Length: 393
Ligand SMILES: [Zn+2]
Image (tube, rainbow, N blue to C red; front, top):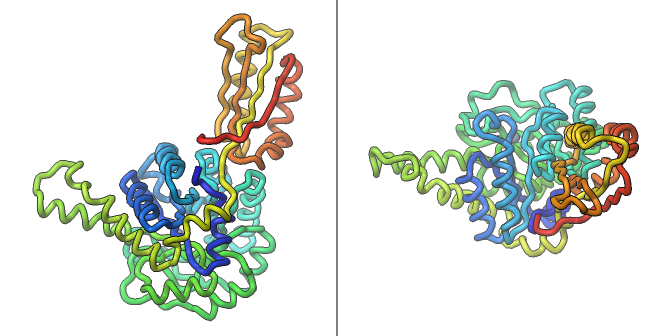
């Protein structure tokens, strides 16, 4: 199961002077292209899903594919929510299988950004999930010309960054030191002394957004000054677009499947080039041995009911599915009834937790306490409840 703890993964990169690519994926072609690159270069990799693009694809569906790609991969993978805007989207991302989340409330005032980020960190850490915050403002829109950015760049300052990390508890910080999202005209002017000072003050893995258009030397200097995660999308989407345009020219009138035939390979070539420049290539085995594996826990409950009818039991169970399914860190709640009449336990619940940390946070969550005490325990007889670490899930 090559899904690994993302905090461990980036700690390894930070400690060993390389950066892991966090590639935004928007379709199966992107997932396949990035994973092929990672497997070919033996690199740890982060598959990233950006909230700003959820209007273009179904987040839940793509997460199923991304999760499957990670599980069958021979290289270590982490799954990340990119630019989550609020608590609800962070909770949802963890439910769908992300094991890292970014909360980007950097457009707010410093005080608001602090409070919003802090709240997401508390929730996510209770699920075992690390959090990336952003301070300062990296302008622009991924995949578009950088000139179209909606606001001026705001540099991250050392003093603010130190206070922000201490007070929010974020595990990684996205810093603004001169990059912009999207396509650049000319060369980015990066503030390396500022980055060095931020790194010295914080001592945690730093993230750079807007990696497209930087040259190899700029990447190496960023990594030498604490950057352990590089977000990368625009160059991939440009490579995909160019592959489609080439097919339009060479095979006019071709259908969809023929037009996108070379997309995955084009993405793969560009992603692999990055993995080699950023030093993540060849690190897969080391990362695997240094990182805790990431896997779900199945909270299994078997019981009978007393004092209520089957119909009332069904109502109680439906209520439980809804209430318990909404608790952060719960991936799904499935219930069932014994197939055979004389079974020792008539009812079962399979509550899947994102990670072992959820065993405690779920038990203590007010919604669980209320449901368990008022609705479930008074009628559930002879309960058995055991948590299992799942393998191959
Ligand atoms: Zn970004």
